Length: 259
Ligand code: ADP
Ligand code: MG
Image 1 (cartoon, rainbow, N blue to C red):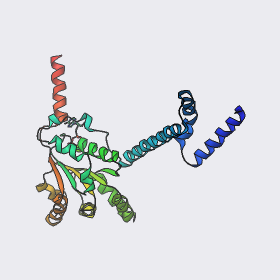
Image 2: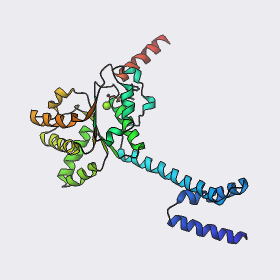
Image 3: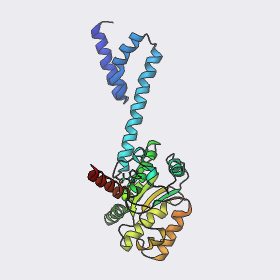
Image 4: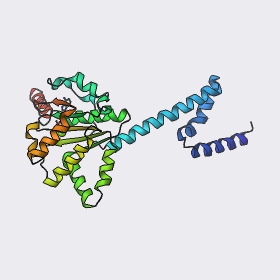
């Protein structure tokens, strides 16, 4: 084929691929065509390789977008979590949860334990795993979620914000119990939690034992009603022990002295 005509075809093809929103095919078809010719590959094989690239890029981009939308505070995964540091924690059960069936079944998960035991780390790792499974995840600290709810209410946007939360498959509420809320704030949070009951999943981390949740949710009745719903279908992990952070810094200090 004359070179001019070939160039023309490629320009038209690129225009079509742009209209069809196939950027990866557009970027790769010339290179792969040369490779296919060199390897003596057939047309179907060439087309298959091109479409595989497009599909893979799309999946990667979608995952990136889900992780961004989740708004994790930190990026921590299972690969950096040392289960041996928390002997009371059932690794097998945690890894089972990482497969995500509990979210399918609208179960909840609570990670309860003292500061520095890796609750945020594990909550994030579980959230990342759900993102990889194609689920929509949203991470908040409890304080942040309450602030957002109060702001939304002030601006007459509460229904809209609740609607956004409703679309999320897994809502992570980290650090419940570090701060107590105003009565209206606690009521808003209660509403979010109650709305999800048996409809979608919640992952809550807290430094407070359930018996102390009254401090956060002011009022025995509301606390009891909340705990009743939350723990009805719930995987509960107790993560008590020494702070990992603290232990690591002690180790580092000892290392310095020894060195
Ligand atoms: P918590 O939320 O329970 O207060 P974090 O998850 O914030 O604790 O953990 C504090 C720090 O220690 C983080 O940097 C976290 O990655 C690390 N950490 C905690 N537990 C472990 C663990 N078992 N293995 C590896 N890192 C851990
Ligand atoms: Mg934490």
